Image (cartoon, rainbow, N blue to C red; front, side):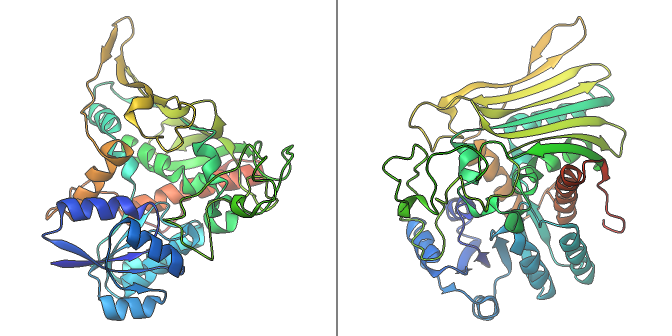
Length: 404
């Protein structure tokens, strides 16, 4: 029986807990949890029916739980510190994306990996495992459209989902370095994986256009639950008080706060090491939700569309199949018609991707294409380059010499 430790009582790690209890109870057990917030740990354990010891001190957590593997899902800016400490203690680790948030943290993690090459470490880029994307990867790798010439990736967060990022800690750059890391690292990893390459240079631009103090607004406070305008403000949000039994943090910060300092809309032109050109865009205030990925090859074109339209009042069903307007993968050939590619039906959170990646992590034989620490670094470095290109107003390199 392998003992698993949780570092971070996050919403994200809840998917791991559910699947571990359902599929791996005979081989793995959750032995303890650590978080800086006792109230949040209490709520997390109640929601997920966990009777495990809780810690606010990392050293004590390691000494008493003695985990063989840990799942790290803390605030993004702290990931690197926990990864490095775990590696140096010879504890295997799986890290939620983004792996970290800066070039310097990548260097520090790289040094720790090289000190401890025998210790398993991976990045939880579950977006690789969406069924439609897996089919796209299979077709590209199999040469179905010949040599790849160009990719386009559009990510759309509607006004329910997009706003959620600006109610939380990740809307402060010092904690996340922006959605370019916190959200888009998934997508940059997908592109690298799809093309079997990595981003080489980036030209980007972005704005903060719907959230923050500069946006015209009538009401402003600190948190929705304590705001004097909560009965009037159309942006009032009721957070899950059972989950967040916290005196430290609640995910209902004002979306017009002057402390918001990240972009909510950005685009990037990317040149990959294998010569492919790509474009990427993310907008966090669109009229509907979804993503569109196109790959142009010498002999064909693949288009993957997963688009949702949220019904009024359905704020928690961003990944619910009942809202899908278009979930398709099509193969186009010049004057050759259109082929609809069948997409395997997989149940579970994030379209079944969570089940797929968690099964891959905890199966006796891990697959060769599992996202590694260095895959995580490449995604982070791409995100950092997008941030820097926006800040500097020029093209910037992505690849960090000496890593990998």
